[in-house]
Length: 578
Image 1 (cartoon, rainbow, N blue to C red):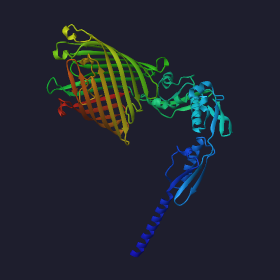
Image 2: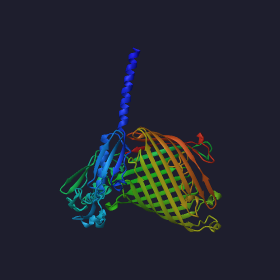
Image 3: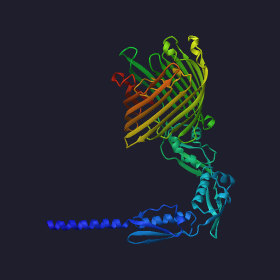
Image 4: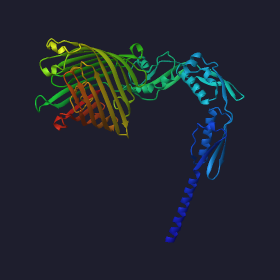
């Protein structure tokens, strides 16, 4: 029995070794020979091939490459023995392009696609370059009312190694846009949607605009696309069929926070917040947002914004923004902003704006040391901003980028306060120029079905020799440094880095952990500051048909404050969507 088992094992070993030997033999060195080495010098070849099928693919690709370079009569011989495979290449004559006449190609098309007759006269024949030219011609036609355009080379002649031809362009019928055909339960005016998609009835058809309809619609968080966009062409008109469903995105929410009351020992301080967001007002994409917060005793913050997109059905929108910040009994800031934005692409937006900021002291004798760091002033600034959002899902992003940056310059005028000693202003330049720059970059990664990671970097800088506390950025809180009160810090320069990991319980509910790290500083006339606050914590976001429940628990640390559970921050709230 043992002897028989040994014979079977030996037989299997022989068969296996034989198969391995056959496999090894099929991998052979590929040798290349050509009577015209210069013709193939720019072509890359594999070092070996596995079998005759792969060799045939290499041979065909090589022949096609040489023909596209003008060696139209290329022949290749294949030689094979037990050790290697060899290709003998005979490129033959390289044909010259005598000329490529524009034929009936309109001059406007020639200009737009970059055709210049001198580029296609007495040059080596290169099929790839001609193919690129023809593709540009077709693309121009598709995006300028001729989606059925065609182009070919006509009157082809080959004489004495010289190749010539004439462009034959057939634009096909001129196609214009008809009205959008809307289906589904979304209430929205077709005129607004046409302006948003840049597809207006009567304008010429553009394949580029039509191809990005679904991507553009995905950026509107108050609708959902139920099915693929349909298109029909009839009587020289193109009609798009859109099946759109209303998404509950309007929100009203309030948040209550329980914080240590630093002014009254161990007592708790209850803070409040109210948010209102109304979208697609009057079925035309307009929006109103309001945010109110009671940050600390005697401190309040109010933000109101109105968005009016596509003024007179143009791609330009107007936005109005108002901020009010009352900081204890120290100062009151009011900021009004007018913004015009332009949407050049699917995910991007460019904005131009002007701001009018007024800051006034509320009391000059409550804290003498602090009053030297504050001043009454007015600033009028003009700026430029750019934003990019490729996350598709604006509420629960899982992948993609968010970028936002602004740069603006302003004229600052310091107003004298009769309650402050005149000598305070002797060393100040009452009129100066103030510079601002902000930048935010955020990236989301999805690994698996239930895991999403995000990293975020924020940077801000204010430059002026006449800076005061009521000039500065105010980081801190749920939108920047969690683990601290809202607008807890003052900074003229800041860098904030955030890492967050989310575990998805369903499409819109998740548990998350996070870490925030900040680098803050300012250098005023009477004081300077530098710190590296950090925050860690966990949170939960539960979504239902009625709304979203949020809970965040965070700890913060600075140079003067260690991580401590008795200084932790707990925030919870409920967002109702309708």
